Image 1 (cartoon, helix red, strand yellow):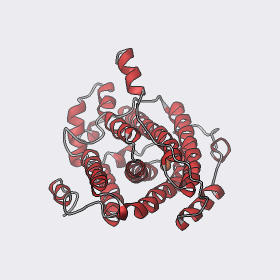
Image 2 (cartoon, protein in one colour; image 1 turned 90 degrees about the horizontal axis):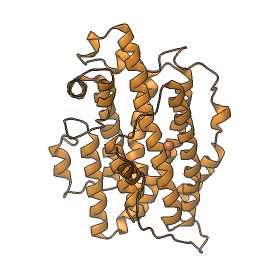
Image 3 (spheres, protein in one colour; image 1 turned 45 degrees about the vertical axis):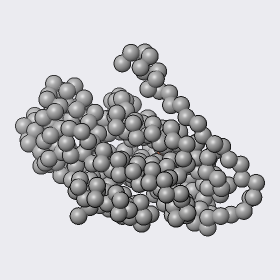
Image 4 (cartoon, protein in one colour; image 1 turned 180 degrees about the vertical axis):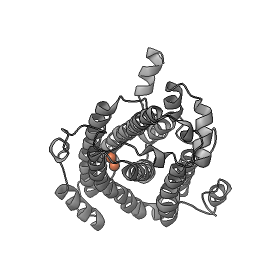
Length: 321
Ligand SMILES: [Fe+2]
Ligand SMILES: [Fe+2]
């Protein structure tokens, strides 16, 4: 990447209204209890996690036979290659978690300014601190493990669109519901596949916070969607579909394809392993089930964002039957 392109990729320009709330009246009862829980459950990443343990020595960072079960490429690997896959794939995944957390930090800072009601701003302020801590733990862990891989282009494109929109409702939908839904599915998959006590503890702590964040998005959107202007609502519906379509990795156009760099770094054919994993990997199937069937689709349906206008598109790509 040239220096100019690199600078452009770091900068997002947008216009955003900052709103004061002089009413000082509670508006969301659910937010009050969420805010109390957020204050009570704060943790210090420096002391809550035992950083003195050697990483990957007490158990594998990633249980690769389980992570790649079903694929054909994995059965051909030597044990040294399997070990390298364990470290590199984990570092790639954790790098995406890290970039996603930084994106969440940036969006939450915007939400403090742009959500209209003070109780929502207060809740969002706790999420800013949570996301800062998540950046801290993933950065610390991935640097100990190997290195930070670049942000995946799809993840960056989705977060940039969420950052650039002037609509706080779209920021909440995009970040709290969709990207954080994605994060919860990905963190849970990683949690099941790791036997490293430090990573297990990092994921347990982060997941505790993420559950609140998704609830914040859900409560605030549930309240604002019914009275929303039809054109704004259609924008939300269209964004949700586009994000689901792109995140549902199933071909050359969709999914988080920068994992191919890892395979290429090892001297292998990235395209071939990509096709093998999306078609055959149990992890890919579990991840899609957790993300779409268990988390996103039911939530979008409850928010009535899968209208009869967009429903056929979800059926067409197989996310609704
Ligand atoms: Fe987070
Ligand atoms: Fe979060």
